[in-house]
Image (cartoon, rainbow, N blue to C red):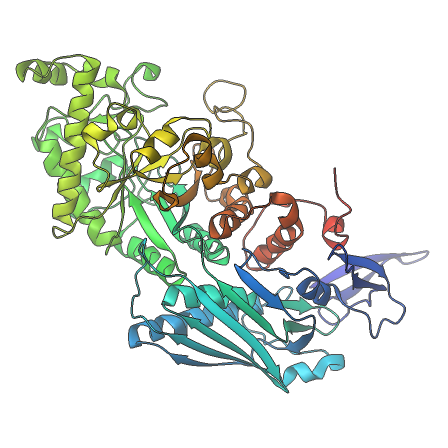
Length: 616
């Protein structure tokens, strides 16, 4: 960094001096000692600055888990390090051809992440070690990667396990990676990148000399939901989100891409949807962009899961129906007063009385399958239906009467159930008659007395967004439904801000700190309500960012580093609470920032450099 600084003088007024921090570095008087009892790095004045243990070396070697995040299943780390440069990485890959090409991409990302350890790293400048550690210029990091399976698409049954053995012999450190699948090997590369740290005194990277790691996730579904309908989020911001997810071994990007507020997905079969439903011509996701995100995620070990929320949470975008001779595809669109017809403005629900609605729905599913496919899951949304909307729409009321369906609450639930069955069949048809599990939010349709009537256990996974105290959790598990946890009292990341309708705080306040996110244990919660459930029914969990009050400008700080806490919870489901994870978490936040993620600060930098001294 170059800058000009003013030095005051008695007669000349101001003397401009140019300073270049890229060539000037002040030696630090501080060194670090690993306390054998607490396994913390203790900052103290160095007796001999030439032989002091640097901060980077202490962080890599002091804690039994180093600075690894999420914590691996089994790990053994040496307490010695060796310097090297990210330009000195070689590789040998043994894998099926389709996997080998993916690994080439993953290795390139790995090397780029190594470079990003350097302060103010620039892609057009290759780091060189300082003169005191010139050995780094000659040290080689060799990757020896073996993958046995040709699967290159993630599913709930994908084996994401891996083994990583790191050994150093002379001027070569060899990282031997074995995994059944590409996804496990990719995770191993992420772990390996976290066995390195930038060392300021030598201006080189340090890597552990030897390590043995065996690792696999507890839960197969580890997700982040991003709503891009209430406020549009740019593709570059989504890419950055996927980068951060990959650093935390989160494997599902749940894309809530449409809602009542807007329909930003361009459909070749129905361009009217964005014509009427996009916020502007600049706020539309086109096919090539969506397919790019799907592939971008796959390379980073992430499935991109589409959600088309229905029969509620639809509206803007459907106003073209009458002009095209199809009638009202949606009803209650932007209807007032909104509180009578929906949970938040604007309102809208699909028109159950219009058979043309199903034709349009089938077209939407067909395009979604093509855009996001091949799919292994599909999210139907399916919550927050307002019966008053349907029951005050003349067309629907007349249709209910004419067909002897009745007008009771249960009558409308029956037709909602019919809709969901039709929706599943339409999706299956769109997917070449290949049925995939559908995901639904908890709702009145998933309550006791209804769920078994309308939603077969083989066809649906239920995503729980109510509180951890909701007894429906036990009911679902006892009835053998597969579940995904997203209980809002821990994993809704939009909470704790001012209200966006009216005054006060928003509905799900208070703010959910990283400690609250970390301590949300799905197995422990389920055990309160059932002692006989099959743990395999708990597929995992997901943090949700609904964007009534967020967009790309606020995205990183809302998600990160709190979703990193989610990552460790869902990868290993540790038996301990957040306290034992704090020092690694604080360091991992710094790592994400170096990688270009604008993650929120958690503590002053002093706390990071003085472990264990910022306590309550």
